[in-house]
Image: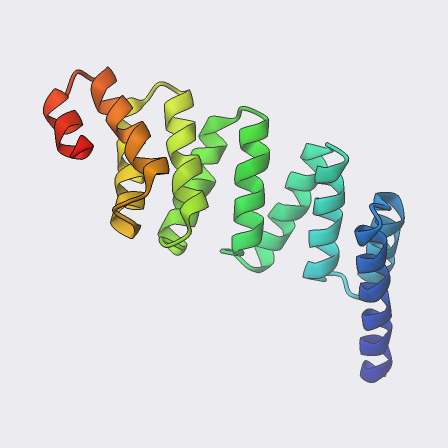
Length: 169
């Protein structure tokens, strides 16, 4: 019986990917729900429902399904990054900060968490807090211009010209 369920799951996953690849979001979501009818916590089904919802700009639904994944796999990097991007799109910078902090703690070498953490603090005009993720990026790569230039600008805004000169060298 388990072999039949596994084979049926493979067929569903194949259909899900085919529909998703053809941008047929409604059909993809329908197959995901079929899969969930016999695999109630299938992460792939949740992920594709979330992606389809995001593609349809149904952001609340996308958030709901990414959170379901995080309940099962607490530090799922794909779900964390997706939540960060969605909340950033929604201008919910406090949620961006919450998930970006988790991302940078669990995956310190992933640039995107640090970049969105910086962007969220910067959007909130919290320049002091925006420094930390930029410095973390520079620890990963001392030549990272995406971190270096904004860091110099922030220190300039804060009238910390010694730091401007230090980082401009």
